[in-house]
Image (cartoon, rainbow, N blue to C red; front, side, top):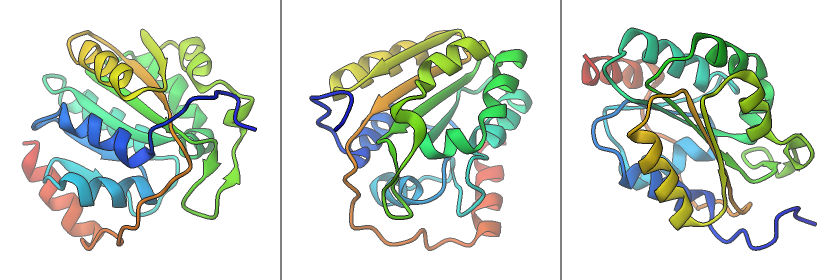
Length: 192
């Protein structure tokens, strides 16, 4: 049923690999299980967890990237989120922030609401990003490829788009215990 056989890493394992390569970079994490898993794996003040607002993480990341051009800004997103906010891909492509890296964890389902299928099974989001104007676009499945490509993107001028195929598996994680105001205040202070 999956279009790409051999996808072996869970979303949490992919998030762990991404966060393991980062230090103090601002990271905007989409709503639902990705935020919850990232919080459990490596909570940092430089992480902005989306508690709601599906599809808005790259728009917030774009704003941060434009205001903080000296910092690499990473957006951790999901395929369902990207499909909800496709217009932001075009805006990123048009504005071309050199410090913007968009990592999309694609499990082909709306994992936070019951695994309903998304359209990413047919709509190749990496091709959409390329057509929108992202400078570097890669698609990976394996953890080693994810690490290699992200390290490469961290050293290049973007915008960059890394699509990571992952399984539907979700970790048993609690909700992010921080209130939105607290997340915002500590994030703003951390990236000053």
